[in-house]
Image 1: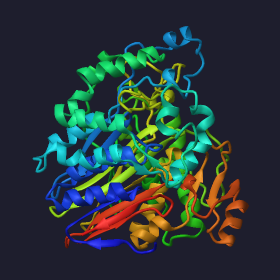
Image 2 (image 1 turned 180 degrees about the vertical axis):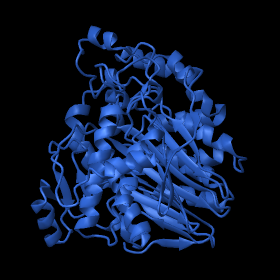
Image 3 (image 1 turned 135 degrees about the vertical axis):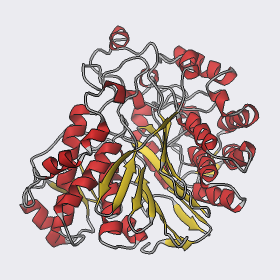
Length: 526
């Protein structure tokens, strides 16, 4: 896929084609881009369960024509019981387990984010219309993708004994084959309950009580009271000015600031041509500078000494860019963060553009799945530290998030929503797609399809090398090695490089959309 989809009436891109189709149909029925995204978010929670679910978190950037972007932070807080001392009493004084009940310690925030997004502007369609496709997929079944089947096989050792996982995501105890029919009737009932009682019923009432009791019985510190205490937040996105326009991303403790720093730093290098050494090396070295500060200081924004927005001041970025060696690689590694996610974008004919990301952290999150409701709970809280610092666990605190939806308001009038899954790779892929399309004029789809890189590890990889898809020019690979990069070649279209996408609205009303050939997605325009 080398050419973007084009249209004037609307666009949706998602890493699963059914989610893109669901969103497109909402636009055709007169819904807004926000409503299309809620419908797509519900659908993809059903059809791509290894990547996301309603037991996870979500983040929104929404830009209406002529207005500044609005942000919605729908990341759940740590349980009231969740303290380092509590975990020490459970026999875990050094680190929080990544799977099972002890890993499920933050409230799932994404459904609260759906409601907050719908509350921002007038809605046109009822909730039952928005959730109907997801309910149908849950009750009638989905065709398991190769990606889900492969991920289940790769991660099964850590998941098979987690309560509720096998009966929900295995078929007769076996890994589902690509194309197998998988029904999620309990999840369908939960979605119907939300239609009948409102999205707030996820946090108060019978459903919250059921989840609170199940979580307690399986070792989690979460209780029904923690669900009731949750609320999504309306936030002002972080922003940075570049030579091409103003870029926006999500507030701390997401790594949105790192994504903005990378592009702000690279902009200062004055690179004039794409795909060569100066482009790739420059972005990688900008990534290192951004990650060094991110790893040292980023955490819950109420506990940070310096606000993340201050990191993006011109003087700060000037000083950091001066530390980049244009010819040699800074010795690495660092401590990487894992993560799994979906990103989706939408635009409607009124010019509203949405950048949305939804995640359960690792593949299938904690794995803990409530058989009565079909909801599996994220393990985002495993990203907390039990040691002193900005990311130390405390009741009510939000953990470090790899999630960060991106948006750009370009000087020529284009508005670009873009993003990816891929944990540690998210800022890196964002910088690749943005620089290729905006700075070097590549077709939007080609910018997503082109070979990508990953500095460090994600998806459970053990190496902290610079991973390059093997489609890169051999001479470029050689020069990167000569500059001191520890290069490792990976598959031509590797999941390690993320599942990216983008939507761009032009001043003329033309809309471009792109999806990632590495995913099972689609970019649909009308």
